[in-house]
Image (cartoon, rainbow, N blue to C red):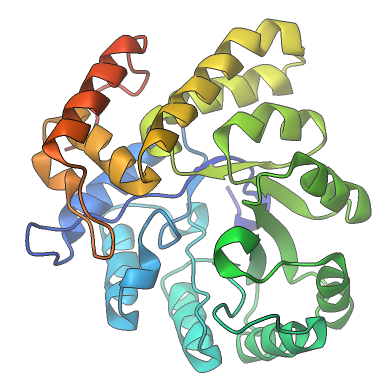
Length: 310
């Protein structure tokens, strides 16, 4: 697979920590490798689910290096390299390129209240100018409910005009299917990815490229099977049961803070309690919450990700 051809199911893969909150690089790498052989077309490490904004720049680089050393194909990775600092975004992006990565996912510079479209264009333009490397492409990360900064049509159009062929995708985690359809209509050459599992089917039918999701850490094979069925021409009636199950699984993890709940579920299913470890400000689920989650997982049908990596 070439980087330009990444489509389908991508997992916003977990970062593993030990009980003291230090990186557990071997376990992070093993999990990423497992995802790539069990349903994922690619992975998107160092994003929201990977708790990247709780990592230092040095830690981000160590994670990416560990993934490559652990056997993950860098052409099947789309790591998050966008931070508030423009120079550090350039440094992290160039480091990813040196690791063999050819597509990165860039958050906008968050925290600043209501930056203008011109200001965002200036930020992204300087990043792209500072990372003008052969074959490097960029996906923009639209998650306005968290970043406070939307990725607008005007911004995409401006970057497409000033840096043709560089911005090739958008991860849309707004949860707004109409917004995703609008991107597809306005930018036919743009790969649009849903950030929510239950939107994979509707987005693919609208001409989207796939999904980049957190729950795929647990249900990648189900998502891959759905994508394959739709690619083969399956209509909504044929895929309804699968889509309802995917939606129910995602909804389960909305009952608690999502990332702690997902990592707790992974700990339960792998038998490795260390997977429940997080970086503050996230805290693990309480014992009572874990017990409730365990009962809820048992009520679902047999998990579809066999032999989960510990």
